[in-house]
Length: 297
Ligand SMILES: NC(=O)c1ccc[n+]([C@@H]2O[C@H](COP(=O)([O-])OP(=O)(O)OC[C@H]3O[C@@H](n4cnc5c(N)ncnc54)[C@H](O)[C@@H]3O)[C@@H](O)[C@H]2O)c1
Image 1 (cartoon, protein in one colour):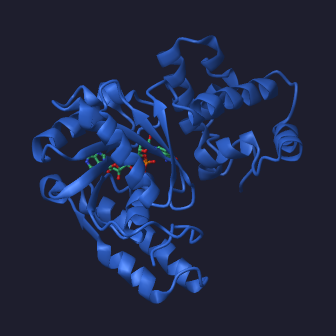
Image 2 (cartoon, protein in one colour; image 1 turned 180 degrees about the vertical axis):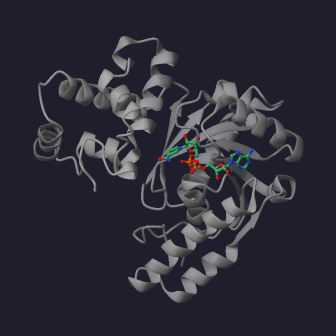
Image 3 (cartoon, rainbow, N blue to C red; image 1 turned 60 degrees about the vertical axis):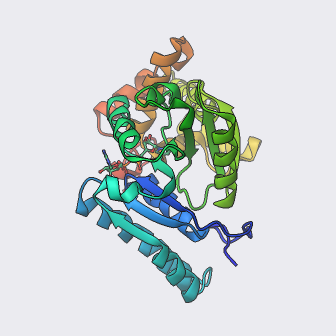
């Protein structure tokens, strides 16, 4: 029997339909692994061979670790690997897919170009999903002749472990596409929530406020990063503190998200804290540069 990527949830009767994933980076590789572990045929697509190889290598490493740790059998992992294919040719990669999940760079012009291309390649009944974390689904959909078939599926990192998917209905997304997308995400072992196309969706709308408040408290000398994280972990039972999350995600990524939220909403509460800008200018980006709110050297 196929189980969810974290091994905890038995999945409903197997759906072997083909899923194509465009972009073999952190998120694309995670989505491809998750769909294959649920029994789908998956094609992982990127613009160049190095990128698809890197994506597959990261999936391979995670699957092999599962065998080593006894969280999956050799047979299960081999079965998953056999369901995964890669290509750099988008047209053949998306052929026969029931859903294409786009996970390329977070840039509206790039995503619109990708969706325009997909519109030309895909049959009419395909679901075109975007993993954007901040961009309006309706704007991405406007690049196609079929906005009713376009939807957001916002996964969280690391995809195989995080259970939430924000399924985002654009202005023209049809009921049947929304229902089928929720069903497919459930089949992946996820817990989808169907939400409106508002800036930041749900999670980032809240998180950006917390990030900014934490950065401003530190900037104004009201509290230290350690105090803020201790308060949230010990007082609210959060598994991680908010500055620990920023260090993990990248302070630059946090600043980008905040700037996007500020631009989309025009609300002062999303105006990025000067501390975030200073940290990015100083290359204090968190774990990836060895220094952020904490020292990671
Ligand atoms: N990293 C996260 O924590 C996270 C969480 C949720 C959502 N997202 C969103 O997911 C998307 C991908 O993020 P990521 O962190 O995986 O990025 P990434 O930089 O790791 O990977 C992006 C990949 O897309 C590829 N690509 C670019 N243009 C392409 C094209 N035209 N066709 C095919 N492939 C193309 C790149 O070569 C690269 O391999 C973004 O929209 C991001 O906002 C990221």
